[in-house]
Length: 135
Image 1 (tube, rainbow, N blue to C red):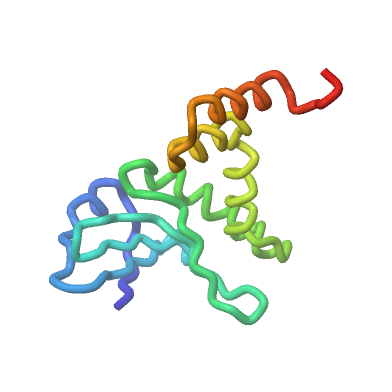
Image 2 (image 1 turned 180 degrees about the vertical axis):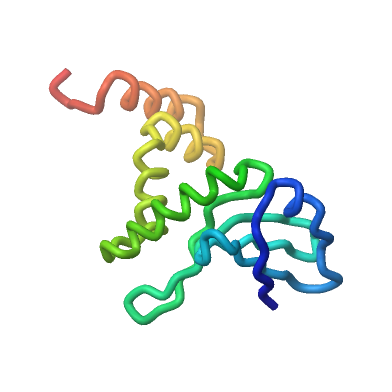
């Protein structure tokens, strides 16, 4: 179910959640910008556009993290990426992966393993001091 309205922060905040499923609202100023509200009360912005023959839904973010003005600007940026045949979802994943450091990956790895203290110490040494065998 899709409804077309002019997005304002107050209007979107006051939309009641549906009894079941989710409801999409289309911005009358930016026709590809969607506001989605689910029966659980989750509210989010997304862009819906057909690209390369496929309907793409690209999530911008949660309503609580974005205001309408910034969501419209982000929608324009995403639409520009789609027009250039770029994949905004893939680009977002790549950016997130670039922000992850080797030290963070080691911490995640060590948290999910039961290793001996000497092994943990060795891994940490190799990450912090370098794994160059000539040192």
